[in-house]
Image 1 (cartoon, one colour):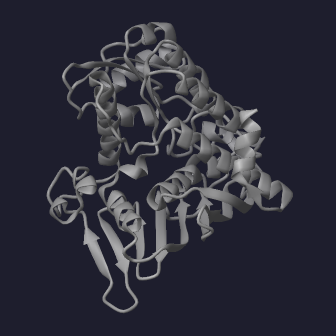
Image 2 (tube, one colour):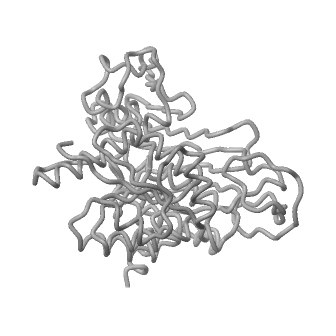
Image 3 (spheres, helix red, strand yellow):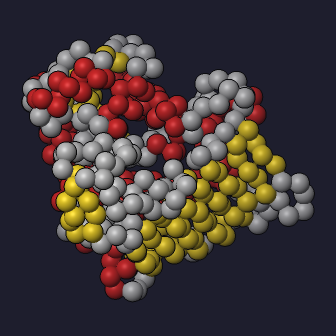
Length: 390
């Protein structure tokens, strides 16, 4: 970048710490400070995260920044992002964009009326082999896509005494497993195929109708349970099975779960075409499986010398020097700040990070999945999009 950009991080949890780590690896950004839900929490987090300044209010943070990283819980995404947009600041937000599809639509419309850069952290787009997979599929040399399938499985909410703010509908929104991790898979499938999911039918499940909320207060994401607390009802889903159709008419399926023992963050996407299948697993991110019927299968490793330029630029070390999730987040921010700099210069730029418009469609797809479970019917995503736009 030609000049340094002043950046404020709003939030102090897992996402904020990941953002701060990635930002520390970027040239041209100047961290102005962090803001938590209270001054006490902000001061504690600033010391823990090694940040010099703890903001006392959102207005104070916005006044000192040119870019805002919104790492707050879901119910705060909307107010923080709207305030940043109204202040004329660039915004990169954690997903979901809003608490529900209607709020996401309003924020998208608001952003469209500004000249700032906005993006959403669907981080899995930014692994080198995901971009390589997208290039293979987009070239069409192996034929048209005829099926897409996969899973996103975790186990951190397996037990009844596992707790996190995402279990509270007022803070997380109407969907948990689908909205929290299924949204990542939906965005990734659409990004890789270049198609949208047009209709869905789904069944949701809940392992625990009651869970133990800890007496000690907030528990950080992925933190182990202490076992002490009060039993409270839970009304969001632990798991989901979803069938869908792509815009080409090709079928797909995905299984989503936060209660599958032994799976820590197992996102797997397979795209099937006439002459090849392509499989990428987030827990083994440095190889892409390419399957053939009439030839040997192959594992393409993450080696910049073997990748197309759009993928190679995301690989920062030679082959065999493994890279993973924190590097993908850094790649997302590289892309975002390149877009900001291009805008400053008046240069054209084609980003790969998720736009507000794309994130709003993902959220409408999540809502369509919830409606399908409630009605036992196929739901068109465009119908949800039209409804929330009115």
